[in-house]
Image (cartoon, rainbow, N blue to C red; front, top):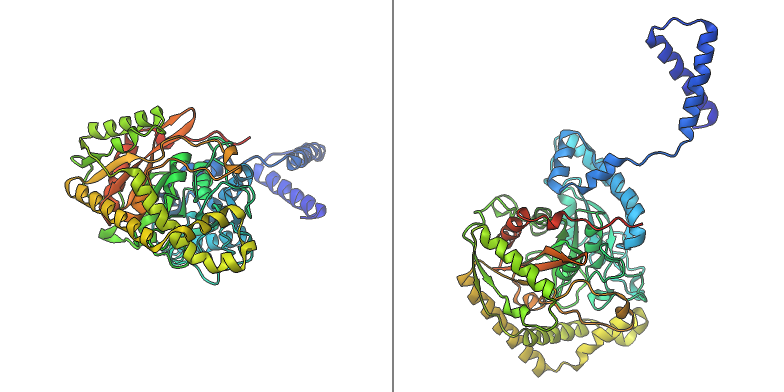
Length: 508
């Protein structure tokens, strides 16, 4: 507003205030009061606008709490999106979780959501909730880069099916999130974008490849994001960043519009700030409505659940930190105290499972990229190029033997899940490692994830403790299509612990 207009508006406001006050003043007194009021008005107008503390704090509420405020008029979707964008601007320079923030599109969608809610059109729990999307998943009109040099301008023509479902549920797609290149190895500063950082310690890895998804949630930028998991890429970042991640049953969430890495292992799943936030997001992604909802509380209570604790599967590994073993033991003890029945069980040798599934992953990913690797090598960062090229060395006989080993592992897990409701084990065997060594070469992080990509069982990654300010996580494995079961157990633990309430230090 021009200065003359601003002065005119002040004069009008002052006269109106005088008329309403009922005070009796002479002309000189009015002039003196006018000068004082003008001095205060001009001075306050020159002050920096204070931060909207209440708007910022609302971002730390759960999705159900946000939804309640959106419906009872205490909050608008536009205000929520503006607060989210402000926090992204304030914090993500340190976290680097976003490749692209869709500010204009998100604000337009927020205005539509407000109008719909005001008109009584309620699309469900995610209506008006900002959601971030890993940059392996198509969002119409936006590049799906996979953090690869050759895909900088790979504009998606249409939404992935998972994104379409989110939009239909009223969610606000707010941006694309960091990934290791082609979901292979990292972090790598030579990628198209710099690697995301762990909000708990910026010098530690986030885990990959859904690195930006976990960093955005851990850093308080979003309550929920959507990532992919081919060998542990939803769960690994959740272990290291202290978020909740769900690798669903194979095929439960469509992969249409998702860049393929290894078709028999690829999954799409949510990362969130709590079990309930993850459950609400999964319901939308998987089309679970009504009685098919996986929301904890819609089904039987967690007491008397039978847990098979695969402790020896990780505790005897020399790479396992004693603090990780102790934290998972304590978490299982908590579940026992809640009335669940715990019995230790054995799973097959992890080394055999790991090498078998890794061979499948490399063989399938090489086949999908072989032509491009040969004809357009410049389209890849060198580290991703070599990771994908490794599959050329897997023979058909070796691939068949690897698949057979995977079938044996799947059969063992299925047999155990006939006796137990869930299997609990560790996720990563260490807390987040220093990032610096990863810049010199690819480093294999010790985890217990990849076997369940081939077996296809649903797995919940859940934070259960800390060591030296870094999160520790565990896995809860369930029967095929029993996401409700693993979420129920995870929710029960979460309600008895303050681990998921902990937040990393704000970036300076």
